Amino acid sequence: MGASKAEAGTSATSARSCLNCGRVLQGAYCSECGQAASVGRLSLRQVIDDLFSEFSSWDSRLPRTLRRLTVDPGGLCRDYVAGQRVGYVAPLRYLLLALALSVLSNWWLDFDPATVMAAGPALSARQQAVRDSVATLVLEHLDWMVLLALPLVVLSLRLLYRHSGRNLAEIAAFLMYVQGHLLVLSLLLWPLKLSLPMAAIALRAMLQWWLLARAGKAFFRVGALAASWRGLLATVCAYLAMLLAAVAISLPTLLAS
Image: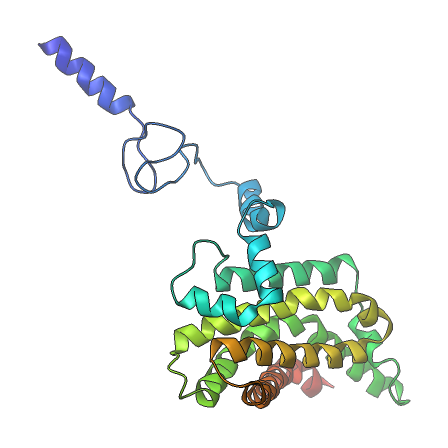
């Protein structure tokens, strides 16, 4: 009897438990929560692999999300807030993945923001130095300003579509999908950004307007004209918010000059 109790105690001690929910593991995955049994100590490699897993796996939800946002962005947003979520990347994760890809592309292509202002009017050496410093600060942080502008744009959309029945969380999910896809589609503007950067910025603004109008038509269930002018106002709000962020970022440089 004593030996049986000792064996039972040894067996219970040696049995592995899921690190997420504590259930005894009986295979490669936990039968309770689905987490892999092989989870160990977190490493830098694992963090990087997790970050880019959506990009590297063509059997994941990312291709479906990309395709649907390109073909029917408003329909995807409408389905997601209605509860059809398992087949798509979550809106915040999609936005952060798109932001990471955009930042990496800026680094990889070695974009020099000062070249945007090179075609401007002739200035003194001191004025040109200040202008280039401000341009560098603003354009290097342009993608991050998308995040800073989100709350204001969400509030503007809530006001513009106040009779739609959508709450703030649903509008935020809609906007994160739209802004994330804007970052993805903006990667196609890189050839223009390197040769005619100001034209690329203008085209990006038009692309944002088009996305907000097209997606808003289906998501908020309004007519094309109503979605167009509301999308235009939301785009203006987004750029005003980014302008305020740009002023805040460049203010120390301007004061120091």
